[in-house]
Image 1 (spheres, rainbow, N blue to C red):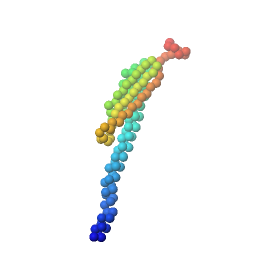
Image 2: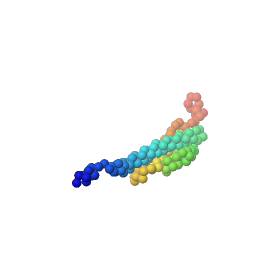
Image 3: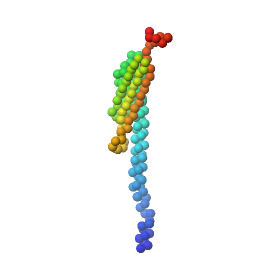
Image 4: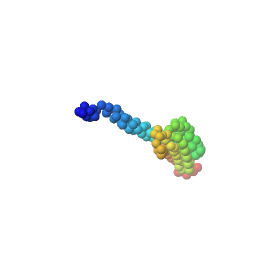
Length: 137
């Protein structure tokens, strides 16, 4: 009877049991870190594309369509896999131009309902020729 009690109180196999219980949690934490790193990267890609689109749209002879096209080219070059289903909007007025880039971030974890979004917005004054007094020529 004492031999049986000694075997039941033994720590043999405890490391394997702990590994089986702890390893999935550590793997989940690592994948969450990768997922949020992708969100961070996607936000930077969206912001860069918006800034490139703004640079093309705000020039004197630029158009909102030209800004959208430039932002889409930047997305294709940088973030076609990180930022899925991107949408680009550009608004050009006489005083201010704004470009917005939005999209869904690629998922690492196959969790239902986990849909992370990233966006970037850039706005600035529209370039135009003025006289030294501030009026139109």
